[in-house]
Image 1 (cartoon, one colour):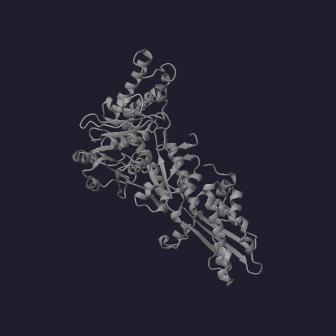
Image 2 (cartoon, helix red, strand yellow):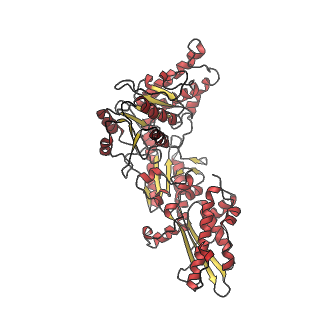
Image 3 (spheres, one colour):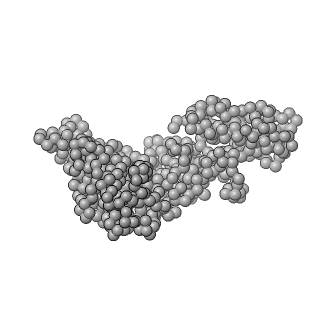
Amino acid sequence: MAYSTKVIDHYDNPRNVGSLDKADPNVGTGMVGAPECGDVMKLQIKVNPETQIIEDAKFKTFGCGSAIASSSLATEWLKGKSVDDALQIKNTDIVTELALPPVKIHCSVLAEDAIKAAITDYKKKTGVAVEAQATA
Amino acid sequence: MKLPIYLDNHATTPMDPRVLQAMMPYFTEYFGNAASRNHSFGWVAEEAVEKARKQIAQLIGATAKEIIFTSGATESNNLALKGVAEMYAERGNHIITAATEHKAILDTCKRLEKEGVRVTYLPLKGDGLVDLDMLRESITDKTILVTIMYANNEIGVVQPVREIGAICKEKGVLFHTDGVQAVGKIPVNVVDDNIDLLSLSGHKIYGPKGVGALYVRRRNPRVQLTAQMDGGGHERGMRSGTLNVAGIAGLGEACELARLEMADEMVRLASLREKLKVKLESSLEETYINGSMEHRLPGNLNISFAYVEGESLLMGINDVAVSSGSACTSATLEPSYVLKALGLGDDLAHTSIRFGIGRFNTEEEIDYTADKVISVVNKLRELSPLWEMFKDGVDLSKVQWTAH
């Protein structure tokens, strides 16, 4: 199976690897997937409470190269976006950007789920009602 | 040292140049049909085929007449199982096999089940070995065949074939073994092991692809098979089709070389494997060997690097060709059924790597591979949320995962 150059680039130089303080009220954490399924993504965002802009994003992923690339790309896209704009990121955008083959589409779905989970967690913490789409 | 390095010798092996040399004349100069009985072109071809038959027989302790040429081990396995099931249908309709067999056995069994044959799939012990008591208890008066592979293609575990053969003989049941990974690598003797049918393949032993053989015992008992292909009645009527003379000459030469060099080669491979194992285990924590270390092919190492997904590891060591039990590397998106049969959790199956060391690998290559694997595993663990949790003392089995 040949990987696209963008997947290889993210695999070789993953962006924003690391962890943010889970206990920080402005940090939202999303953990999706399962070890039995072969992929687990942890994605964290740090939101400015005044502007609702995502100021920082970090990830750690256990999974294939495409899963790593999908979550790395997601953190890149999240930084600087408002929380509401971040909810508009679709897995198909990731598929297109990384040129993922059909068997790897689930990696992009997982990345979208991770984004939504992190935002849901952040909103829960700040007491904002969780929007229906956040659990889609 | 040349990159990339080939360490996937259970999948296939490079052809030995000496084998190619033995094959060459039979493509052009001696192109005759081995079944042409009335001119020298046919006689020369037949002579080459009969020489190869002897070479193969000698490697496994058989007689030349007991060797049937096929297109490869998949065909040999199909012919053995279907041929026996059909020929012995009046005597019984029960076959015993094991959960870790190759697909060429398991899928043939599934086909036979659809045709009314009953199949018992023996579970394996944690080390990958067949439980002999369980095998004995599974044999009924309807059992016609036991088929257990000699050595496994993923974990390299070598079954107690001699004991299995003895049980089958005692119970009067035929014994077939898929010898693809074992023949030419470790001593195999169909007489001592009481084997009635044995499949082998050319390309796993530094010979050509597209040629294999089935050993069919002729005496004590005389095994009969129903042919699965109709035609000219070649190979004692068991396998029709014009013989692949060049391929057969190559298979014969490959067997001859394996027989002559096996003793030294076993020692050399075992020492390379040990070197790789020690290097990996001393530099990396949380590594797990899959399958028995004691009963194992000398060139095999199957190891799980916990918290690192197999395909991502393969991607990082892209100048070393190995394979993984990870779902992401399989066509079915399921992790290795062999590892699962050993009782390994899916999580560890996803992190397994199979190293297959062969005749042309060098110590330098093993050193390079070990260093590369160590550095990539460390890098990926830094990236792994599971590794982070493990280091924080989280019990991963207690975590509520969101399965998808």
